[in-house]
Image (tube, rainbow, N blue to C red):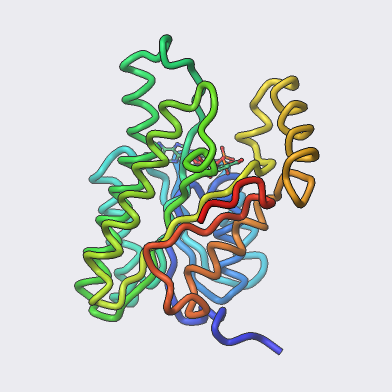
Length: 258
Ligand code: NAI
């Protein structure tokens, strides 16, 4: 029997980073839950794959090729997504890039690039989403993608961790500003998830992480994109109707902050 609190039938969702990894798994799962999904990414080929997979299962999906660091492109795509029904119930800002450099070797261009995608890209999606949701006056759920880096830190994580910490601050701040309008804003902070992003790490780094998770994480393994997508679905749906300004951590238990 379907659990109705997770049912997104008749709702419209907008997902950035939808061409790959966690974003793709999220777009596919939100569609399985019944939402019409607008898939945004700069990778046109990957987007086509996600949209085809969703349509093959009989749900509507629409691609938006865009760069999340371009405010105008994000505004336009979010506005288009809301045009059909006048509403946009769910926005998941998942697009992100990895970067690692020691503090003493970090250049301005590293900071600008990582903060541009991982923070400003999320900010633009949140601003566009909140404007559309406020205008529709029917509430909504915004989900941002942080990272376990906000809990643990680690060598090389200055740019990436700073951007993700800023995403957490954005999430909490926006939650306080729009909660009275029935708009909820929450972050997901995954631990190590096997995706094309992590597959691009060198073999030694991957082996080290898998060994670390096997030894230190209570669940003894790295995660799968679908396991993060389920966290997003929870926050996107009415199942989390009393939850806002929170960080949900699908991380295998590797960090357990208060
Ligand atoms: P991925 O590399 O598989 O997917 C990222 C997607 O974002 C790609 O489709 C890429 O084209 C898109 N993207 C990147 N820059 C963009 C831009 N400027 N404009 C539009 N699209 C852009 O990576 P993954 O692992 O699925 O990561 C998704 C999110 O989850 C990221 O925000 C990442 O920081 C976060 N995350 C991932 C973890 C992991 O272990 N894989 C752990 C914690 C957080």
